[in-house]
Image (cartoon, rainbow, N blue to C red; front, side, top):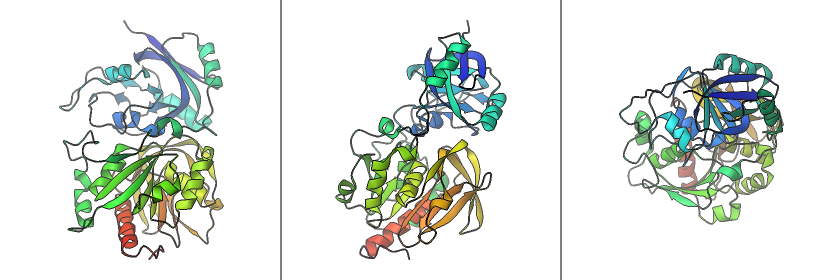
Length: 395
């Protein structure tokens, strides 16, 4: 016997469909992801904390869920919206169905709704608060609950997703230790490594870090120490890092002024590489401003132009905020990457310090590998810094 679920938006629009996953009720910002696969990685990406995720690809769940293709210790999405959920799943690595996985983690799902209409509505009206419920059958009640949910603007979710204590990332930490998850970029990694070179010491801030980022850093010859988001600059520098990594994460970067203050203290001490929220926080640390996008960029097919190489990269994204390019000091900061869909700033670098960042996810997981070179650049910057630590200036 099937049960109904209702998705109610704060503007009064409602969608009634089939309930699956956990029997629950959740509120969050309704967003959409245009990836054709990778739903397990999407659900477990901490950047989705506080959000209800809609998949634009119409069939979800057909390859099940396994214990290795996760991006964090648990899923962080509040709810999951699909056109059709596949009860039949088939893959030699799958352990359980997606339905069982959502039930285990208390996540409510809804299917058999017009996701195309929903996404068109979000694109026109913008991402907004929503309530997804398989418990309350009254649409007007759920609309009111959506309106009472927290706004994403001004919301600090980093403290929800960051690790409690520092830890070393190694093969024991990695759920994919039995596999080679980076086989597609193995040649680039091999060309970067120098025989006999001492591993680079990277301190990675966990604002909601994805496992695939850590896998990339490890594969490129780094020993990675992951630290909580509130770790002081003094404690980071006491670890004598060759490089500092600023991770992805959820929420509004402007709600994290204390963290921005710590990042400011790190600039010039070692090479810094930021991704997604790390990019936004770095922009704030350099005196810039951030703003909320109408409906964000989420998917594995976003075209970005690298103005340094004049090449187009197809990239993986998951962000709802961006750095205002006009707010950055052009005498200090070079704007390097722009989104071809809407002109949004996607990357920048400091003109004299080894500091750079991108809005998108060069590690993908899921997604294309067009931007692997950014990890190679981080390695090159650390190698230069190690050879001449007193000269922290871009070559």
